[in-house]
Length: 563
Image (cartoon, rainbow, N blue to C red; front, side, top):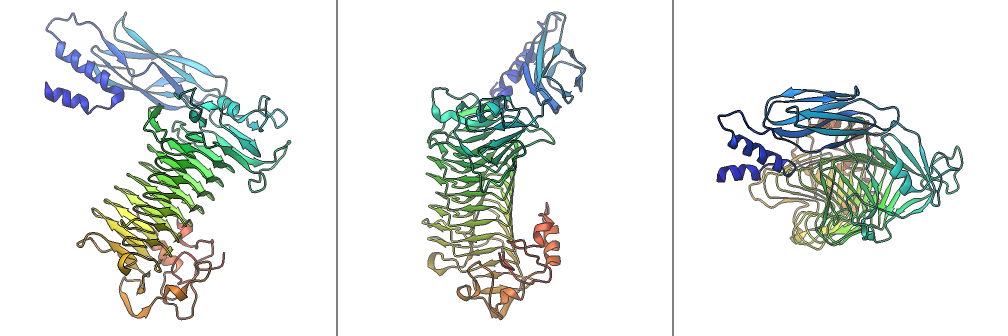
């Protein structure tokens, strides 16, 4: 009996009751055939996207079963089976008309059946228009509506155009406390696009210019999350945030949680943006001046999310504990041409990848982040992977003796550093440039300069805790004052001096500077990238931080030409 209970304890919480009942039915079977028919569904309602797709519901029964749908736009993959636990898989067709409802009936006898109600969003994909004081139906700039109302009426595929101004969330998060202003947020529960930067008095034909027309989503220091992305993952769709400033969120110091679409959202993570098990793209956004009284103030990406960030700035976010700027957990992130600057926190003040995170950073700056524990700028922890291409990691600090000013690796991680510059970082512990600790942390450095960092006892810029740790791969790079050639051998006759080798934009200067002579050209860098699985974006291997062409260049580091 104890073994049975142990097994049940390991079953996912959503099916615990169902599986327990299934075992009970099996245990109670007798020789006679008078067993009472039993049928239990995981859920009796499903919300489907207007784009259609595949859905499933778990159920358990002690009799043979069959399933039928009362509409032709629902197709059941397997419509009958024997007793036991099952996963009913069905496909919903694309909807190009009004909202519609279908019913799937699961039967095990004439008198024992249950229904699953499938409600599909309408096919309306019209644009929606928003102004600060909008009270219309949102069909045009002249009839602009409010942002809260636009989010409520939107369906998958809609684009919400938002005029300049300050918008404060006034709608309670799903499952939240309506009496708690902190639970007010801009919740994106559909795969839609929010595009800001239009003039405050926009009229037909207006063009977006976010630099001129600031569209500000403001939590006013009250909202636990300014923006919540909870949209379900639908193949071919995603949430897009473009041209927005997201600011003044304040994640609460509490362990209280909410569950949306089976995903647990924490109130104490992600003051600016929180994204749970969704597909999203963030373009030309400023996620700035958010706070957390616990963890990660700027942006929290978790629960199997896949997020692309382009031309954005995650800056001046402050956490009382770990993670200042961004935190990627059990998810994937691709970052292009962006900045994570002036964030503060305990561990991982700039960018945190933990646990089981995969992160690609291209042409990205991490500067002036201030930490109080491990990893001031970029921290990969617990089976996480990081690929840094053309990144400038400079002037980050930590008051802790734990180590890792520029890049920190902890507990079986892999980091590939390609054509990057890590300098000017100051830490009270070891490894002001890169530090590794615990487990097998695999580090590879290509065509990069890691020098001019300050660490404990004048130790090496690239350091490791374990004496028997595997040595990093270092090719055509500078570590401290030591120069390595393309084969990984130290060049005994060459010395790098960080005090005289950088200009104000972190380009390399000096006719005899070895970091200008012994680097990798674009062709060789392409070969390096091809050996990484999955390979980084080839386009970014052939350029520098400022998109200058590396063809013909043998310059190491992030910068080969002027900004």
